[in-house]
Image 1 (cartoon, rainbow, N blue to C red):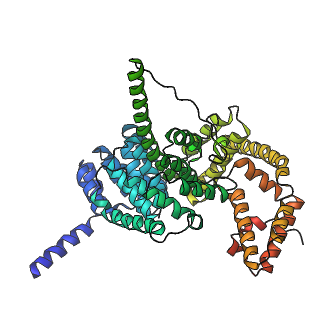
Image 2 (cartoon, rainbow, N blue to C red; image 1 turned 180 degrees about the vertical axis):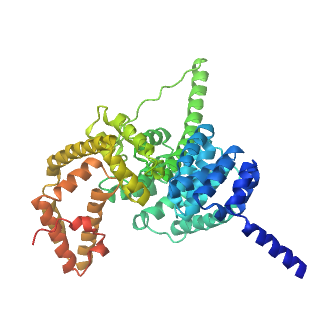
Length: 512
């Protein structure tokens, strides 16, 4: 036993005695695989510029591109290493899948699940049959408590992987509970939360017209200023539940450009796959009937469907003619004082779009993309420094001029459009004064503020309405309305945070 302990101590001691000089000697002797193996077992040994250079080059030379990509992501983001920029570019050209997997692995290790999810989704798009990646995405969705999105991914597997067995067991419980809510407890569908009603329909996909209509009306009622990405997908899925496959397919096309998060895009992909199967089967049946009647194959043309206003409140707001593609900001995290190329590439992409003849909405969309990119860069000390340096260059000064010009153009339109909210103060006062009890007054106030805040700040709001509302808030009437809301909140002994009234809502407090 003592001998065994001594051997273990000798082995451990030999490991810790190895330093960068030893790895450099291994590199000179071209012992790349040995270095790579050490890197996997003892990554902390390479936690320096020299260490990452040796490890990333070794992995690259033996074609372990995923590991090299992961090493270089660390090198670029944490140490601003130019050599890693070059290696990443090479890997991206050679094998995009391993490039994305390496970046995703790095972000996972850092606990940045949002960016990791984005990269895993990019990887899945390269090969939609990659079940290992879909398992990772499903687990991440489950941890984020995205019940609907998780269930959609569980249905994607032909046979359930063992890695998801616990999640499957949990969803069997979910299904029982949501089903009992209506079959045994006999809950009134109009009185349950929107999400609970949707999950019931999701777990029991039948053409229950009564519940579907109640849910559709609920979504529209509580989303006066536009549906969120998830709610828009719910509406598309409701049409699928009703077996209105053509309508669901067309509506999905209408909202596709609004779906920005990788989670919603993944959900859209799942629904599209189901629709393609259903529409293909339907088309085959139509052809078979035509053969029987005319003894000749006939393809029935698919025409654009018109929607009723009650079913598709937002469908006509986003047409196929609008270019609402997001600018690719996935590489911005790699920007540093020694790597301004990333910012130059993003600037070029912005200019290409900005030089087109854009509609009012497209210009607003593009400006928000630029604004979001700036927020992303300012959120990190390294990328913030890179942006500051870039804006001092000639190209950066041009970007600032383009930004200011586009911003002023939009603000001018916002001021003109603010008239659409004139009378909002009177409308609110009339509604509030009709309430008799304190409880109903609180409900009116809270509901009004939440809708107002959603329009003014939410990413999925209509940008023209959003701009007009923010301009209205700076008018005399808008300031009076803000003052009125604040006074009522104090009168009802409520504090703004309890009402979700953010600082921005009361930023124009110059009524005193």
